[in-house]
Image: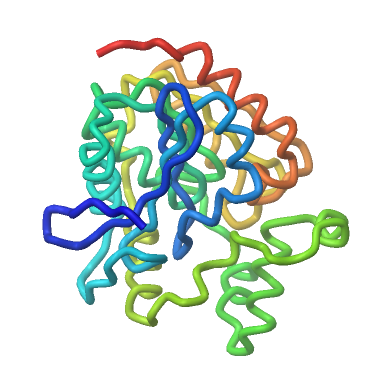
Length: 264
């Protein structure tokens, strides 16, 4: 698998497919590029898609250091640099949406259009998940915690109709230190003060029944980022992009198509 080299020497694995304007797809916390497997072909028909394995996941390096969403953003940029991509659309979901915020803040001339899915601004302004949700995810029985995460991602009806594997439940091969570093990175995210500086056209997507990253975060982002749009998907949970694939992919592709030929 090809990889780029981050500023600290960490190898960052990446994957490419499709043709057209480049689209960087950023996955959720403690997940690798397989997060996008069920829906990637929707985007490959219109875009040259690029995914990465975050440091600590997949085929990337797994240094025993502190991670942050800012660091993940710079890792993503080193991949674009390695590929010679001067400008790309960026679509991040969950923690990937937090990473995408920093990409847009720190590299405004590199982002054609931005989509932030099922995510939050972080910090004291974010709407946090409930104590009950946190307790269920931290249950000492790993099967109980996995079951809780699965139901936060999808409705029971969708699970019944769509058998495993579920690629949004985390990279099972991550070492413990990397899993903890991802948790700290996501929890430590706070882009509130920087969000008004985002200049890329922005779409905020969120499922109305998302309890993992509560839907009240969507209007916070949409109001904080200049001229951002918001699209809520009724009844969808955290993995709206899979369960409501037809609607969500169409909304994302339509928005990106509006800005297909943005220039530097």
